[in-house]
Image 1 (cartoon, helix red, strand yellow):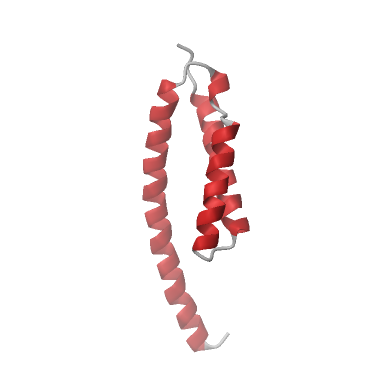
Image 2: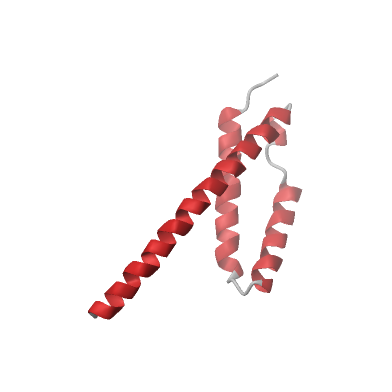
Length: 96
């Protein structure tokens, strides 16, 4: 890699790091909302709502296409995020 390309790469990576920092803040906000949702659930079988999951993924696909993002990328990201939060809810579910 040429020195010029290396310099450009370094700048892009700095921007990616800034974006990652923003994402962490967003994930923290999302986690706090998930905690509130979990407090409202009475039974463990309420944790997985397949209809809602399908609806979320369908909407993400539409938004991805509209914004010219490969829907395979966003689908994988959201599926992983959804299942990570499902595991979080299962682990933190407290019977009432």
